Length: 257
Image (cartoon, rainbow, N blue to C red; front, side):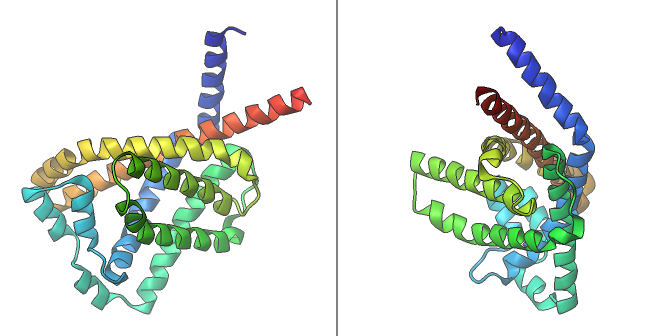
């Protein structure tokens, strides 16, 4: 088979896998679930974590916002002290339930990509375990990478991202899949998320600023929702592509044997 024919076949398989999981709808659903579940959870998490900056300041630092756009973000999100004083046990439980709905959305993506039967609520414990891993990584990542510099920081960031995106499907699939089959998804997800990070720094400051000027504080919500849907789209593409690569590698090994 000529290289161009092989590339076209891979492209068709990739697109077919994307369509099979209803990729566009899945990206919209995951982005919306992240917006309604993860952002409130991160706001509370940032407020309760000792010596942590507020969620608004974290966004400002992440996207390099200045001037009126930075001030709009501070007005849109409550200060850490306000959030901490208003957190109740019932509110915390509802936040966790919302976050678990997001984990189930991610779980369905991986199940669809690998053709596994859905487990639904039976996978709750693994969703909680994944949320715990995300919390730990969010807490230690700045300290781990802060000690590095230059190329070492870039390599460390890619390595940490690769490990995180290897652990993510492993846990959300309830440990039903071997690490080796998840490795292509982890590699493509890490590359995709790195590209999203670079694109976000360039695109988000202007988007947040223009949205805030046109629609006020609600415009920041529009910009964040569009950002999360875009991230989810990259994740769906990486997941379907990684699952397709894993199936091809397994088929090649079976043929060689």
